[in-house]
Image (cartoon, rainbow, N blue to C red):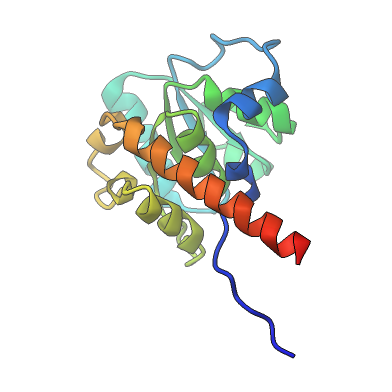
Amino acid sequence: MGINNLGIVLDPVLLLSKEEWNEFIGVDCDEKAYNDNLLVYYLHNNPDFRKYVKDFSNNKHVKYATMSPTWHHLIHGGDKIFAPEVKDFIRTIKHCRYMVTDSFHGTVFALLFNKKFAVIMPNDGTGTRIKSILELTNLESRIITDLNDFSVVEREIDYGPVNEIIGKERERSIKMLDMMIKN
């Protein structure tokens, strides 16, 4: 007896729409907390990432906040957001102006909330999920390859096609999961 591979489904975070995430986080948040700032969310120890953020902040004259589940990332500058609860994590991403991340889920929430964002790929080879979602949404150009190029973060994104792709993939994934559960 074998197992049929029916295909790949979206990460569970993407199975909910922006509206459903908004309902989850509620409206009881301080919308102005980070809406003029750069939000930095990173998981990997990468000196190039830290240098890029500081240079971007200085070059563009924007403050930044560093959000991380570990203390050692927070000592490198900016306002500090340590291990926020899930709702606060999502709210912070929703209300930032720009975001730079090396995290898959940081990338996913930036996509869901239609943020200006850029990705610095993890330096340990774990970025396959990030690369996959950016390829799916045709946003590979959001990967920073030149650490002196600050335009990637500021570049506008036409979220119409991105939202359409994610919506279709969400629908396909839910149908596939439903079919697997019923069989």
